[in-house]
Amino acid sequence: MKRGWLLVVGIILLAGCMWSAAPGGGKCREGICVKIEVAEPVRWGEPVTVTITLTSDKDISGLGVGL
Image (tube, rainbow, N blue to C red; front, side):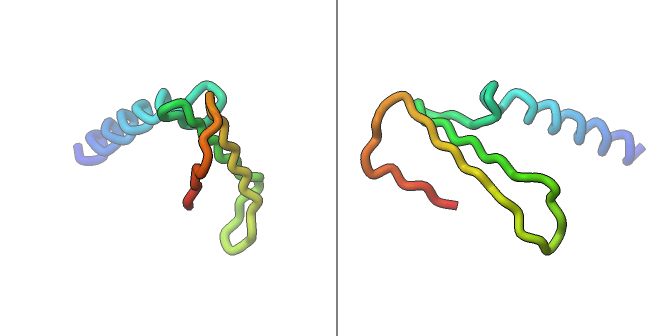
């Protein structure tokens, strides 16, 4: 019974995440979109290439990005 509820909750959480991203794979808020891409293969203990792309509807001076 516990496994069944855990499975249901997991499916609901995954379904909730499905529509949270923009169509291009980025996340947008107030006209600023951030897209993060990770080069595969990803292996434990090895470096990986990450590409962060910022786009916006307007020019915003002094915009900072933190990880």
